[in-house]
Amino acid sequence: MSVQQFDLRVARQSDAEAVTAVLESAYPGLMAADYDAAVLAVTLPAMTRANAALLASGTYYVQEMHGAGIVSCGGWTHEEPGTNKVENGVAHVRHFGTHVDWVRRGLGAGVFARCKQDAVAAGVHTFRCFSSIGAETFYASLGFGVVERTEIVIGGRLKFPTVVMVWTDRPRTRDFS
Image (cartoon, rainbow, N blue to C red; front, top):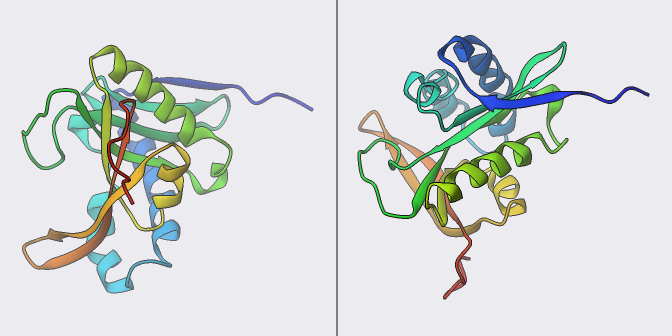
């Protein structure tokens, strides 16, 4: 039995097509059970496209399997998504995905471990994320707690249900649930 070899590295702009392929594989199937098809028809085209700013950030990573290409991705930013707001010590989890053929093998957890390592070295003690409903279990397995269930308004009118979650290395003063 051969051991599969993976490389986890900082993403490059040239990874855009492969990252989009991972997200296009991951998101539709994982979200279908939790979201109305009409909502997904509007949101998925934007959600499954690689974000050029993230690819250039130096804090977005890809996991590549020898012989199979990029199979997982994700990263973090100091800025809250959609804003320029920065809170000292806080990072935001961004655009995680694992190709449907590679889910539940620890790849996403490996990407988060790299995010955590680099972010903590940069002074981060807390991660926040806007999780899809279906990804809540994944983030909970990494130690994230639910802060609130809310909706993000897309395009000024479409409401997209999301779960705000937090991970911290600081002692918790309250239960996140």
